Length: 248
Image (tube, rainbow, N blue to C red; front, side):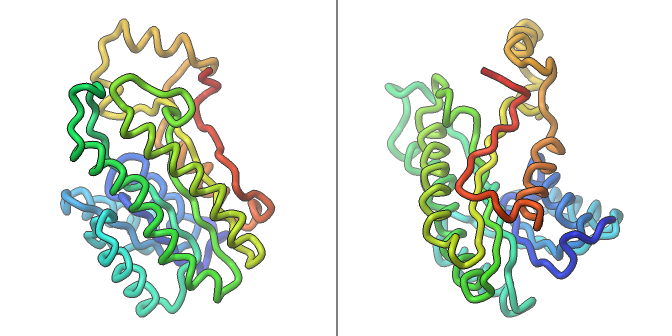
């Protein structure tokens, strides 16, 4: 375990599975004290805590719905009470409710925006307060390849991630003078349960569009987040970094 993030306190939303789990593990292995949130799967959260402990890291899981503004405020207040600081905030929590626009219900649009965009905004707002006082901080928002490309049946999800990228650029301008960087990471097609379920022909067609010839891994994304959280990325802000294997 490296110590490049020793004495740093990190928050990762949606950290119990997939990309979020890989990010929480990477930050913990680098020495950070990690608090990660989950919503509906306490078993997965326990597994992530165990994996981090086995890697020699420190973590704690806490249930939190980022769509609930008061819950986010309480979450960050609890971190500050426990640790006295918050150095790194990673907005990974997200949901998808895919449907063609003529069949999409307004409540499905609102739910995705509430979690993916307003939830990220709420965490940014709460985390910015201690970071401004510390005059140091790293905010990293997870976007998606669909924010740039679009995708049929995902008008709500794509809109939420496009908003996350605009939020990232605007906030970077607000807080940069206080030593806080704000960046976004936009994964492409990552090897997950969803992509594994694709028909073989669809998977082959997808791989033909990726110059590196493979799907990404959660660890590919986590490595970029770890870089952005480190001192090495101190002059990188307001950027959207695409982790997509060169997908056009």
